[in-house]
Amino acid sequence: MDILEAIKQRQSIRDFKDDPVSQQLLREILEIACRAPSAMNTQPWEFIVVVNDVLDQIKRTVVEKLKAGEKPQSEHSVVGWPTESIYRRRQVELAKKLFQLMDIGREDADKRAQWLERGFKFFNAPAVIVVCVDRMLTAGTPIFDIGAVTQNICLAAQHFGLGTCIEDQGVMYPEVLRKYCSIGESKQIVIAIALGYPNWDFPANRLETTRESIDTLTTWCGFD
Image 1 (cartoon, rainbow, N blue to C red):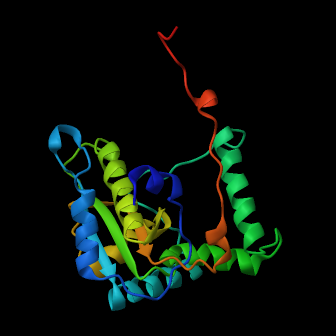
Image 2: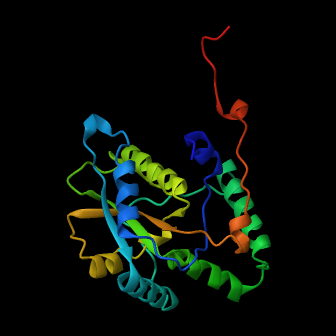
């Protein structure tokens, strides 16, 4: 797939087919993704790839904690959107479109809870890539590098006909990931990427998001 086409077509997938993704293909995706730039070529990223029984155990345990009322808490700063900001308005617009596609009413507490649970179950993806960094690195320093390699993973996956969803929810119970994936305390768990073959029959996968005009985002300096 052409790189420009992949960038334009990439979207967040919120339901996947049961078809497994082979270890060989996952390895190839990561090898390609690791060509991402990083400060001084430090390559601070580390990956935990989870499938099959281990992934199922994580999903069950996370949902149990969620239903028991245990507050989720990630190991890095989760983005917050000030109430009256454009960022909050964009987030609300996205949620409205998703709930409309999924036929989730504003007052339908059961469906809203099921939707929330879906995110903590990695949207039923057959494979998950958890991205970590070493705690010896200054807090926040590798975030640009992690963003670059994460984008590369998503674009490489797109090339092979796979879909992805980058999600904070997947790392909001880090103790569960540490338990089942033997992640040491010296590593900080940053983000999860749900990955698999998209289920295009799922309503939320038909979502079309908008983008702001470059004219509203860009200041041009020194041009005639």
